[in-house]
Structure formats: structure tokens, C-alpha cells
Image (tube, rainbow, N blue to C red; front, side, top):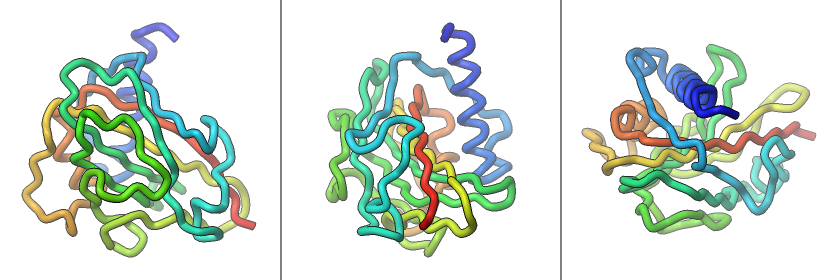
Amino acid sequence: MNKRLHTFSAFFLLVTIFTACDRASAIGTTVSTTSGFTLTSPTVVAGGRLPAEYTCDGAASTLALSWSAAPAGTQSFAVIMHTVASPTDIHWYWVLYDIPASVTSLDKNTVGVGTLGINSLNDRQGYSPPCSKGPGDKLYTYTVYALSAQPQLSVPASQVSCPVLLDAIKNITIASAELHVVYARP
């Protein structure tokens, strides 16, 4: 993929996520990216099926993630897991920020790394596993953001939602990488 197309794709993706969490946050957002920044998991391949263990049908574990080739100047990372069921039905399951720049992976059920924000399913700090209703595959997206500074937040962690975090990082995001997975409830 050429650099111009990659930059457009990354920009479009960030605008989509901003729109998904809060339509007003997308206005005026510009993000530069680097093509080598990648997000993977030792558990599932990109586009693969999320094991039930990471959903409400299993143990509700957080997925192990690993990222590489963060751009120079990265001071911290943030991770968001979300799904867009429809333009008016958006959920975020995991909001994690203040991840030190020295950290390049999260183990399954990681604790003590970064600061947890709230999820949209129960408005509590921490991971809430996907538990989508309705038949068929649902697409879930994990995104890691490389940040040029620590997010400056005016609310406590117990109030940091996806829109709040994305607003705080919109001018300090220097790259992002995604991992898309699917899951269908039994």
C-alpha cells in the first residue's frame, strides 16, 4: 500500500472512530501516521475469530496485544476496543491510557499497566466483554494510539470514556494501528 493511501486510510479510520464515540469530536481532526506501526495478538490473527474466552460467553478475559514500530517521539500509548453496530449503536469495551512508551505489549488480563477508563456497557472502569445481541458476526476493533505526550484530562479516570479520551489525544496522536476481529454469539 502506498504511503498516501495508508495515510488516507489511517485518517479515515480515526475520523470513523471519533465519529463512533462522539460525532462532534471528528470535526477538524488531523492525524499523521507511520506505515510501519502495527498491532497484533498472539491469540487471533487480523480478521480472525475472537475466541469465546474474551467475550461474555467465556471468561471475559482481555486479549493479549503487541505493537511494534512506534514512531519516534512516542511518549505513551492508549488502547481502545470498540464496535460499531450501526451509526447510532456504538459500544466501547476497553479504554486504557497512560501506558508507558517502554511497554509494547499487554498480556492476557493485564493489570497494573496504564490507567483504565470506563466502558459503555456498564459505565464502570475496566474491561467489559463483548456480548452482542442478534445473529451473525460482529466486527470488533482494537486500536493502539502512539502519543507524543501524556493525555491531559480534566476528569477523573472513573469518567474517562472513549469520547473523553479521544478528545484528549486528538492533537497528540502521532500514529495508530488496528486489529479487527469477529465474533458471533452461539
